[in-house]
Length: 307
Image (cartoon, rainbow, N blue to C red; front, top):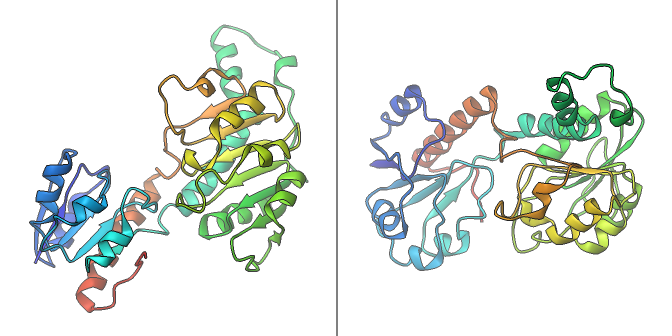
């Protein structure tokens, strides 16, 4: 049995490689292959681990041998799941490892934009001190946070929110009750929330879910936080509401594009480069989930399957 990490690992410590070798031959590539090379690598292994490489339907038709694909990430929108499963290839992701790190990053973005920390840091570096007026802000204590998506990360955000004595609203596709979260429809959530935080996977039903209409429902003093894919939001509409100060600000961990994006010029936005998940603890948990996925394949009871 062969296990191949087909593209450049962000983090793959020696202990993980040693552990994987208990299950078979291991090969790790340190580059990001083009489509032709990716098909070659996927066809030369039994278990593939993927991080950066898009896997499309036309590629799947050319893949042989592969039995099991593991997305090392929580998101798997870069993989054609339907094509792989139709081709008889099992697919798992790593769904839990980053929930605490991402939840904490929500509040890091919130505090950075609310307290204008980047501007404050720049002021200090220019030699300014005891400067108050530009940094007037609101306390978050007693405010309302609305969670668009109440899965594991959303629930972790709710737990932190409780410590700040925030009122927690939430919405999910099935309107399934979640302890500690008042379920409302998405329109009500956008109208009532001082902070709106997105916690949804990117798929056909969620891309563009935050429409121009929904953004127009937000309070003028509200914040939008997104630690998911940028494609969840109508970005031109978001630019307009931010530019016109129809909401107070946004904290964004992803944009649809970074080339010539006008959002980059706004001073009421704090941006991070997809790093919400990246903590010491999250990296290690990610590796444990990877090993768990591999082990489950050999037991015949594959975990974390995605369909």
